[in-house]
Length: 613
Ligand code: M6R
Image (tube, rainbow, N blue to C red; front, side):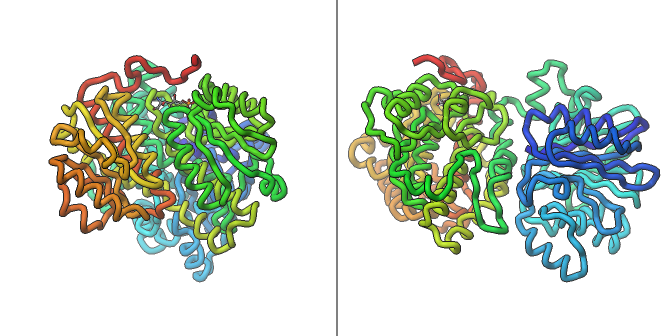
């Protein structure tokens, strides 16, 4: 997971940057680098592998200077090697950039720049940024406007930090969307820039968090923040408490809110190192698969509990549709006693954030004892479900503290999609055009998640309106049916409001009896193959006097005629729509619980890891 650190002041920048990067090491990365302005020249040291490699490189070839930027990279475009490691330098050697996020239109930008004569030295999307900065500096004559103009050309969500020997007294940092944060640390005659607080907390507790579409010009004596239109912003300096827990929460009230907001980044990291957008391919090395092994698989049984089981239900649809392998979903606490039909051609795939859930581990053991192949999709590194599996797709979301799982729900949705494409490719069920399309559809997912997060205020308004309800019914169909289950689970576990998730088509077989004004219906009705069916479910609920909150795709013209309570989500290919529809429901549950003044991160009776039966 990419990390950024920058320093400007009177001290030697290199050890400060390396120290900051070390504090972000726990997030995982595959290469690292640092750029320092040394005697007016930008000097870069970067290498694949761990920070210790970079440290040795810096020991062998020292760089000293009072301004510098550094990065730990988790590869998205191009191999994790020294050439692709950040920082990236432009053609003139005068501009250097580090970046978190994905430049979604990098291919078009690269072609444009190459046509103008720019030579690329790496395979990364990030290199387009530095060439654009260089190009616009030549026109604008100053770094800030060059960065502003560059941002206008980039699609996607980004955290970007730029340094230039042409303006050696400043670092320019920008945030667009939610590709992780950008935080400015304030010191005495020195200032810092970072993607995450822990990188700079040993130096300062006074910080400014950049909002989306803000740019900071950081000199050693001051920090000026403007928006991307160039308007000055009055920033609020925050003092971070010494309490390490409060410090880790940063700008958010609760870990759950922080984790919801981390999803642009966790989704970016989920793609990193696995998706080759140029080749239109997915590779999950962790499964040690080849075509012969993949073709032998006759059935996959996904086993999990709670939120993880809901991710598994989406996974079933994805794997069956894309890879054409039959999939069953088994609730782990039932599977262990079900005397399941498993043989050596059956894969038992356990999904678990903690990797320590007793029921899930027991289900894995059951599968193993019957001769099945064990795979897992786990977040907690080194956990039992990771260790005992034959292959593990690790979730790339970092620690999840809030008991209500959020970023560890959307990551397995994408992991299941990746698995489906990988299996489909190996088993020959996907033609190259389909494969390219499926892979290409992934590119925009992190920034679409960011679009959902940018609409948080609209969700807060709905949360205020419905926070005093005693019951809610969540309805969905097809690939969004599990999201109805998940939305309801999120609400009940943190707000203690009774909520039921139901397949919308089943409403008329019973739950419709409950519908009246005191039982609002949350209806998932994005533009997917079940859209028309969902419209008629909404009409049926309205006909019984129910109040409907609809999750609808931007531009939908039918839903506004039915209800005023609409959660708008951006348009997305339907196989990926659960990633996008689940995020506003996480926010809805979060804000209701938070408005009710409840202990969001540690709801009553619940544990983060359920290690008992
Ligand atoms: O660690 P696991 O993913 O195996 O946990 C499974 C469930 O206990 C967990 O998802 C639970 O449902 C969460 N509290 C949901 O937010």
